[in-house]
Length: 384
Image (cartoon, rainbow, N blue to C red; front, side, top):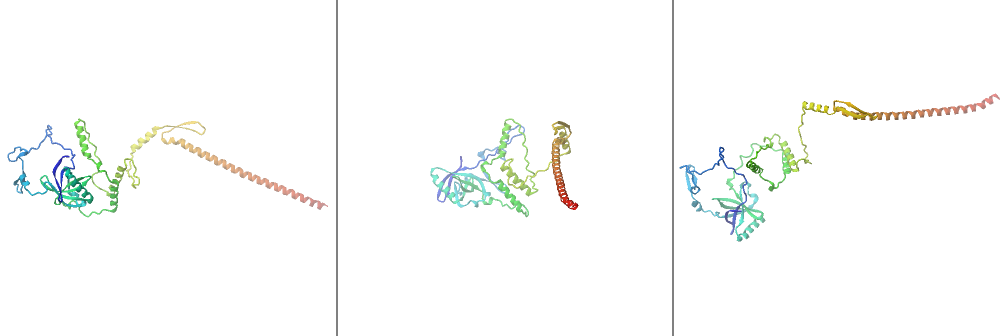
């Protein structure tokens, strides 16, 4: 990587020669301005307002514009004579915990590379001291003609420096907060917590610029002479929140579906999907009935005797006739079985009655015979 600044880190009495390298790069796609009539490129030219002539870079200097519009020329020699101890030095002024640095102050990021073999030992010493102390170094440095504030921290095995805005460059946020006293219910906070838990963490390396990729595809298609069809806009709503609870529940459901994949159930989500009922028009119902009527007009089934009977019908309900016949068969069979059982019961009762009568007659006849036999001697005794 090409260095943009060479200097040294001043760490007490220790001086560490370093090179400053950009830690970030811009992948945004830039466009040129053209004349729509003929496609010619539009260029900005530096023209002097007094003589209206184009001026080259070597003829351009710096000036400070006063409040009344007066231009005060400032040369590079004037700036070089200013006492600026950080012109070629990153001067560490303090070591503080990382949470003392407000992220709002974060600006550009750089890597500090050891410049030469002699710089390797003190560079490693500072890196390991920062790592072991879990602190960051606050430093001053000069870049592009002005003094800046920076923060040094360890990234892997490299010392990185973040440019910081000066504290007085951070605006107060008092006008950005919502107006009025707004109360948030516990149920809303619970759903917000559930949404955060569902979204979970993300692999930062997996994030990428979808818009830049779409622009690249558009440029490639236009260069190949292809017709580019407009993409269908996604339904993101109108931005108005009507029911915060419903919006949070839908967000949790959508996040779980996104995490689990399409078609995966929510499991223990405890929330059922609500879908609006679809209304069926009378015309559609009529068409369905006509289709059903014309589907099957003949129904064929077998009778209990084994004969095949074909019946004509105009509705699907007649298709179920064999099933009804089967039911009637079962009913008839049940009735017959019940009748047979009743006949057997009646026969048993009749047999019992007959046996009882016969036994009675036998007992009667036998008792009659005995009486006759007993009465015979009496007659004999009477005649004697």
